[in-house]
Length: 303
Length: 303
Image (cartoon, rainbow over all chains, first blue to last red; front, side, top):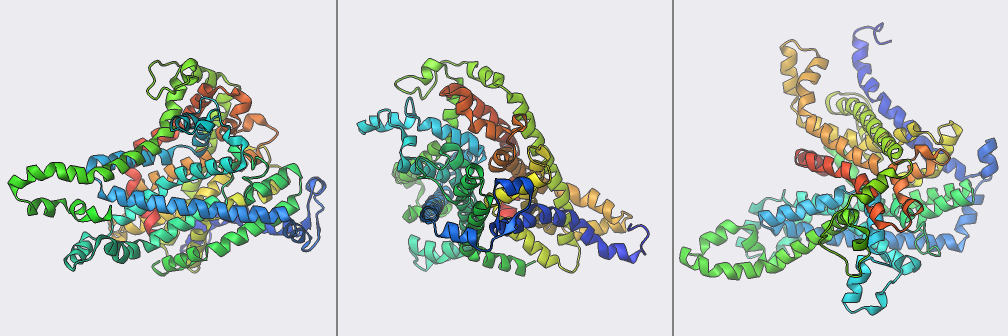
């Protein structure tokens, strides 16, 4: 088509041709599902509608139903608690690890870095399976260690039969899987801080903690915000690990919003309610990530 | 830890300050002072490596060693029985092939499409460029975990349910924004003058791009394909949701998560299967890590 156009035109059209596949992909596989999700949440959409394809609009009925359901609010609060606990632990541990790496000599630094990279690169489902083995009631290492530390009650303890215990294991798993990325990213930002700044601060008599507050933190703030936002998104929408380990159980004690939506869709075939729950999830996420959006606009400034 | 910063971040000045004869006497004291730091480093290393170590050693241990009352932290005898059992499991090679196909096709698609879009954003001036890039930047944090249900319905409507190409498309889209952002930051770092010089010497614009920019872009292509590979190889939620009836089209993570249906409590075989699942990614990571480190931070820090 562009061959028949005058010479000048393809030049102006070329950028649009180059981005066309990306735009088409995003339209079909990202925008359309997002919109469809919202549309379904305003329809009556069960098994019958899925097969026949004749969904009718019912207004806010689905939202009224889930927002009026006590269980939904339990799940929302659990998801918020889950996200807060995980991201707080991840950020604190990752910052400490990054600061530690910065102070290590070469051999130890390489050792720690390769350990982190190994943990980071290991596939999520593989390490999730390993954690089930580590916490296995019989022959599991964790029970053995706890018993030998004097906690006799952990002899053959079944972690996955107890709600809070399963929740705790999932937190440990997520933190273990997420710290390497966060620590390496924060560390790579730390080493961009010019050492001259520390030297002159030291000449001016600044203490170690003062230098951390006045030099390290301000320089790290953008990358901190970025890592924090990513970790919030990842833990808030985390599904694979929870589903593989507990499927939201036992007794729903590890059911977070994505698991909840999936359960409604798969077992009850209420795609409308699940759509409403997913839309609420996205809304909460957007509210939490206004900071990330601000960072984004800053990025746009130096484009 | 922060108080030891002066001596550790500036070993040069510390050494210069202490006179040569005193240095030998101070050596043990300095080692002692660094001990907490090095112990923390060692602990970090052990904690990050242990689950992976435990997975691999369990996979090689004979069953009576796995079920020993005192866990064998340093295995004494090795067996390949668990691996042959995992490989002989129903459909193992088929799931392997499916995962390989999904990973390869989605990463390749993302690379080709992203290269065009990244070139348009980094090198061409056009209306809507900033808006487009802003959307790409935002799409990096798309809430994929909340789009399962609409994606299921879309797949069902378009007769793409239980088909691997649907998963290829989704993984392509998950990887696309990140790939565009990273490739763009690489392209921005490559001086246009190099291309222009080649054009002066008689290259076409496309030819200059192919001969000059493309080779310089290699680290960016490597790092984006590495991360894309990890995403696609690991993806669980969509593979679990969209492949239901045709069990032969499942991918490795979904199969592995149902290990208890396959192997029961045979932890040796389960760990062997996990090891075989993790191995390709770990090898790829270790081979490419040095080369992509720069690209990774370039994309993560500068956006």
